[in-house]
Structures are given as C-alpha cells and as structure tokens.
Image 1 (tube, rainbow, N blue to C red):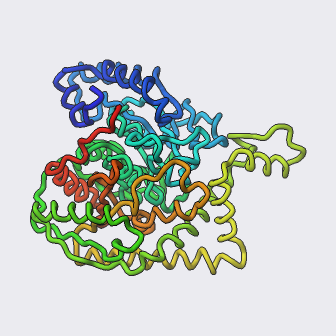
Image 2: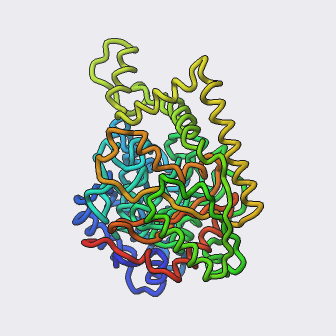
Image 3: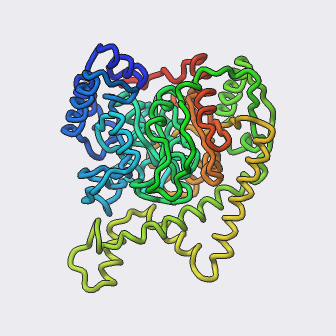
Length: 483
C-alpha cells in the first residue's frame, strides 16, 4: 500500500479495495519502523490520524466521494495545527501548541485528508539543507549521508521514502522545488497569493508560499486543489477562481513555446545536470513543444537582492518571539532586557540569528536606501525580465539546482555556498510566479530536477507539462533502495 500514489489511493478507496483506517495503520507502522533513519518527522499524530481515517471511512459509507477523502498526508511544521505542537523546527517554539488551524490545514481536513504528523524543517524555514532544525538534520533517503534539501526537507524525505504519498510544504526561495529535485519528487510553488498564508508562521511575508510535494504531477494537482483558494483572513490572498487542475493534465503540448534562458547554463552549473536538462528539452520537443533560447539579464543580481529582502522581512517577523507572550523563555532573567536577550539568544539557532542580524542591519537608518530599497528595485527588474520573456514563450525551463544534493555538513562552514544553490529558484519568489520541479534523471545515484516556470496563475499549465513528461519518462517512478 505504501507504494500507491495519491491518485491510486483515491481510486482504491473509491473501489473499496481498502479503507482509510487500514491504510493509515500501515503508514503509521512504516513511519515508526523507518523514520529513525531519516528524522523526517518532528511530531506524529497517531490518535488524530486514526480518528480522521475512521471519519473519512464513515463519510464514504454514506456515498460521499473526493480525491482527498481518507488520503494520508503530513504538514510541514510551520502550519498551525490546533492543539498540536507547531515548532517551526526551533527551540523557540518547542513548547508551542497552536490554538487554531491554519487555513491550509482546515481546508485539507474539510476535504477529508488524514494528518499523520508534522514534518521536520530548517529552523523558521531558513536553510537549503534541512540541517538548521533544532530537532536535528533530516537525511536524504537516496543516500543517508546527503542532505534532502531545505527548508521542506522533512516533507520531501518522508514522501520520497514512501512513508506517505504527499505532504504540504512552503517555498520562500526554492524550499519546495529544491528538496523535490534532491529527492526525486514533483514539487509546486504556486503563484504568490494562490494559497492562503493565514496560520503559516512567516519567514519572509512577501516571498512565502505554501504548496504540495508529491511523487507525480497528478498528485500535486490533487493536493493543490485542496489547498488553493481565496481566504479573507489573509490580506495577500488573491480572489481568483481555482480551476480544476486535474482536468487540464491531459492537454496536448503541440505548439507549446518553451523558453530556455541562456543565463542558466553558466560555469556554476554541473555539466552532467546540464546534459539531463537538454535531454528533458528533447523529450518535450518529441511531444510537440517548440523550444527557443531566451534571456533573463538581471538573474545575476537575484541572489544578493533576495538575501537582503528575505532577512529584512525575517528580522521584522521574528521580533514577536521575545520570551514574553509565548514560546521559549530563559530561566531567571535579571530584568526585561536580560529576558529579551537571553530568550532570543538561547531560543534561536545560528542561521536564524545570522539572518536576523543581516535583516536588522539592512533596515537600519542610513542603510535602508543603500540595501533594502536597492534590492526592491532589482526585484522589479527581475519581474520585468519574466514579463518580457512570457510575451515570447508559454513556459520557461531550466535546472532546479546547479548541483545534486551535497553531503551533510559540507556547507555548514560556508553559508554563502549554500545560498548560491538557490540561484535558479529564488527569481520565481521575487517575481511571485508559479514554479514546478520534476524528476529528470540521476547524477552519481542522486536525483536531479528540471524546473518549469509559468505566468501568474498558470499552475495548470505547469502541471499539464509535467504530467505529459511523466507519461513518457519513468524517472519519477524510481524508489530509493531500502524504502
């Protein structure tokens, strides 16, 4: 049962081949057996899962149906879940039990999804390797000595190891797409505002976006259907109709215009990954797509702009964690200043402290114009590049990451080296565009992803292209040894 995709589970439940309760028990046992190798979960919610599974079976018994009704999933541990620890991978929130459900959690629960637990993540979603978590690093099921990517590495590792069929994740600068590439999954970052951020603990509010991680584009379509939609509680949510993503999967790619930016194939890209990307292009050409070279001239400025904007917003968002209202509080503070300093110093890990300091500096008097304002201007130039490109093409294609997954600890002493791994993903966040990563092959036994970008609210187009590609390739069906 653990090898079934979300779509296959929906069909199996509809045909009464098994019940949601049976499936949930199988997966909970599998998590208990295998997750100690991976460390992909922070919290398991066995009682809630069995309760939701029984309720889903009862709903199906009355004739109700739905692709997510009875389907087991997990949530990245920054989506608030009522009465359950929501830690953000941080000591700061180790004792925090959310008093309400995030909109994404509530919507998926209403659709009948079964929550198996909360997945591990980089602390406050800050990282590209899932090594900054207070609960320890997550291991990549393809090679336990390598990182699974971050910050949604727990969700990615759990799905890749067949502990569950799909999971929620978030993407601030590539945190869905990069782990998807490193673990042989399909991951989708929707258009900014497509999925509600209410109840999703913020890292950088103008960049964060929730989305699905699964093995196939078909499964991502199912999960996104349950997550997407306008939310009046989120001021950045867009009131735009949600199409039937599954209905558009089988559209023809005949005449689809694919742009391949020349800037993507620089010296920083592993030549073996470049070859796999070119192979993907050829596969799509066989399906009728037309490919042309395009240019994104301001891409080179995206990383410095991103690493000013994101830490600036983080320093503001994380100021609420002060040891006074909720979360970690230091022992026996001498006075209020000591309470603030020690609670934050002891509660936040090194990477979070680093980004808070960078962000506070960029926003300080005398430096705001030189750094933050300039970074926002570059952000506009990046967006303009994409708008010009989408006048010529329907989809932009390239590598998701410049290298395969690196060894655990390999970049810990050089944070900038880890930041540079986001070079292909952060532009979509700066511009607010939807992006998808799908499996495209292997380098040294480690998975490689190809990234697709589309105009605003064209998630259906991304899923269509990925689904057609997956009907004609088998990379996404490969399973890590031992899982």
